[in-house]
Image 1 (cartoon, rainbow, N blue to C red):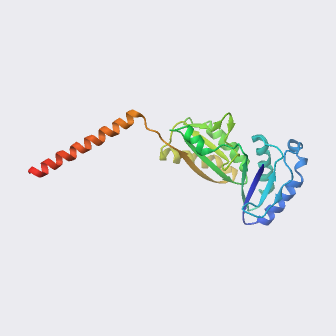
Image 2 (image 1 turned 135 degrees about the vertical axis):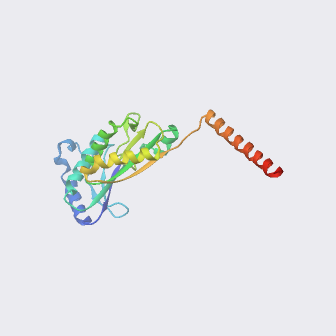
Length: 219
């Protein structure tokens, strides 16, 4: 299992040097003395650096690694993303199919400081009644998979509600220094009575058009 780091310049070379140094000193951090993951290494390919875990990390352990990465890069102009995948990671599309009429807003952070952003978003969710922190089997949708944070709407949101949420997100993330992208997903299902109402509207339109044709024909 890997945590993959993608770096954005300038100063990518300095960021790589700092990550190498961090990977060589991980055992000095008390919460990571159990050698949960092996030393990291720079790689050639679509990502720039990887940390290989020797066992599946908890969210707390992932946050600890992210916090250390934030500290090692905070003085640079570089940005980074971190993506940690596991074989049983949550499939957002399957989750959406299982929860119709509910929306999910999914955030990808560009740090540093991703750890501060996660903390700020966790606090924000508890302050907005229309939001519920996304969970599946009591496991937070945080840091595992393609996105860094997911929030669940109690119903499918309107566009103006999403915009209002993003204003709050901007406020709480301002001091974290992160950039972010957001993707809102979900699908709607229509109840039988909704379909019947739409059918009645269509019938009324057809009748009105028919009457209009009669008037035109005999005028």
